[in-house]
Structures are given as C-alpha cells and as structure tokens.
Length: 425
Ligand SMILES: *Cc1c(COP(=O)(O)O)cnc(C)c1O
Image 1 (cartoon, rainbow, N blue to C red):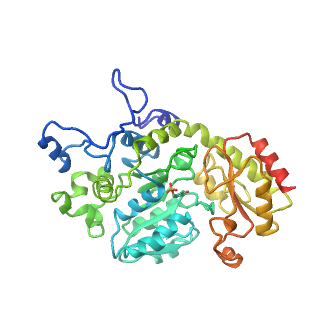
Image 2: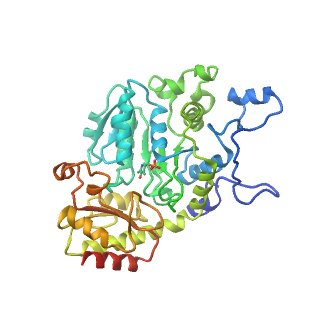
Image 3: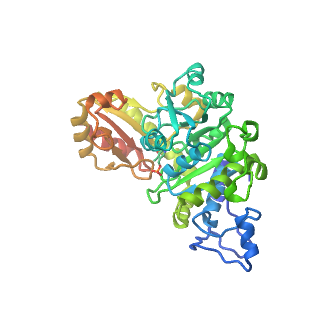
C-alpha cells in the first residue's frame, strides 16, 4: 500500500474485505462487543490483545477510516475524533499537562486559538504565540524548559498564511519536542507535513475531507518518528508506567510507531469520550474516496477567482498563496506545488458596508460560517465571527472590516466569477 499513489490510497486504503465480505466499510452501529470469557475481555483491558469492547474508546468503522488517513499522510497510526477541535485538544493534551508550555503560530484558526489561549490556560498550560514569519532565532527564543510541543497550520484559516514546516520542525526538534501541524486546508492530497518533518498531523475532517458539509469530525495522525524515550524526562506520560493501565509504559510497549495513538485512545478517549460516530466515519470515508478528484477543482476555482478579484478595481487586496503577488507564494511553491485549497480572502473598498452589500447580492455563494465543501460560501468576519470587535481592533488583528473570505466550491469557475462580477457592480 505504501508505494501506491495518493489517489489509489484515497479510494482503497484502510479497508480490505475478505472473501464474501461487504465491499464498502461496514457501519458497526454497536456500543459494545461480545466475548466468550472474561479472560478474553480482560486481555483487552490490559492492552495485551487488540480488539474492541466499547465504542466510547474505539470502533472498527472508525479504525478503517483512520487507517486510510494514516496511509494518506504517511503516518504510522491514526485515530478519529468527534471534531477538529477535539483532535487538536487531544494531540496537545496527550503530551502536555498542568505546568507545560506550548509554542504556537499566532496565525491559526480562531477556535484553536481560544482552545490554547483560554481553555488550556485554565488547565495550567501556558502558551507563547509566535509569528509564522519569525526567523529561527526568534522561534528559539520562544522555547522554555517546560515546552512540550510546537503547533502550526499548513495553510492558516482564515489568514491563508503558509507555514514553513521545515523551519518549524528544525526548531522544535532542536528543543526535543514534536511539531504538531493542522493540515486541514491542503489535505494530504496537496501537502503531507510528515514528509517535511512534522511529527503529529491533525485534521478537521469537517472540511475538505468530508467535503460535502455533512459530518463534523477530526483526525490525529502520528508520523511514528518522534523518539519519546530520547526525551523521557519531558514526556513522562509516554515513558513512565501508566498506573491506570497496570503500569504499562507506552513508549516501551508500543514503540515510536504506536505509543502516541495508543495512549491517546486508552487515556483521553476513555476519559473524555470525544469519539466520532461510526455513521459520521462512514460519511467521511465517502468524501475521502473522491478527495484527490475534488482538491484540484477547488484549487482551480480558488485560483481563477483570486485572479479575477486581483484585477478588479473595487478590490483593495487579495490573499491567496497561489497568486504570484502573494506574500506566501514562494513557500506555497515549495510546500504546495499542486496548489493549496479553494479558500480566498479579499478586501473590498468601502469596508464593512461594502462587504455586506456585496454578499447580499451574491446568487451562487451563500453566507455561511463554513468553508471547504462542495458549495461556494462566504463570510465577512467583521459582521459575523468577529462582530464583537471594533474596526480598530479588527485592523490590529489583521482582519480589516471589509475582508471577505470566500470558499470556492466545485461549481464551474465561469459561473462563480460571473456571480462575483455582478455583485461587485
Ligand atoms: C474548522 C477548523 C478546525 C476545527 O474543526 P471542527 O471540526 O469545526 O471542530 C480546526 N482547524 C482548522 C484549520 C479548521 O479549519
């Protein structure tokens, strides 16, 4: 499977039916699993045997889909979570605890920013935000004795900055901590962060992976390369006995390839239960089967719309890493040679009022708090997700009041452009 191309993996990886078994991944709609003896079940509780006992922790449908995502990212193991938020929380909390510190790019999804800066702070986990454009020296300066992880997004939502993954990985590794990369926007079809040194990759599968706006979900993939034992003092949860599992040492028993996901499943899923429903995992898999066909179309539409907007007199600025004029064009050429995604942001002359009246006139693009599905949608942060901020605060946050984020779907680009053109008139 490992040598196969990405498209073949999108369609086939993760599930291989036996003779006479269902061709499609079965939805195992069962909370629990039956055993002949208590000894049999006991082995599962001791992590001596692999198998299923309760869907709060693991379910076979989810595991087939997770195995596909692991294959797509080139990782050693993966798990599905109930949402992208849960994926990022678990990925961080699996190696951080009260007293730990995280270095994170400041250019990340608002939900993740809140999670780290507000909610995890209440758990006693500190963060230092760094500019994604910071040089190595500035990045190094953000690290502390208690730093346990570095975090960034390949293409940030909604800022559309591109992460220099190699630079971030180099700095993280110099400090003996893993780099966690949220790869939601490009998906493994357009970028595989593990190939550039990332250790853990996360996803909101709600976006392009599902791709139809049908199911909220998340995923965590472990590259299986980070040597926890070499930094044993930093990661006691992986390198010292887990008393809640009869003294198992994850890094010893499951090795570099299996320790992170096994611990995350057996501790965090057990205790928090943020599992994806098997129904949603099935829907997610339908999306994955066409991911390699859909992503190039999203990119084609994104680029066509970005180019049209760039040439329009009422548009002040366009952000799209695929445009030669974009600040992140060089990084995009390196990390996203086939393009990034279908999300474009642009600023209209006339600020908030102009943005509002433009969006009202759109006939194809709908106003939604969503991105990355088959139907084109748009949002003006100043009047929706960021409406509590004043124009001055918006400017400081790099989100001008007239900024519009448009997520180009799978429609014909000529129709999208015609729709935008009439709304700009
Ligand atoms: C949407 C999103 C999330 C959160 O995912 P949910 O599935 O909505 O919980 C995290 N990261 C990025 C980059 C996102 O776009």
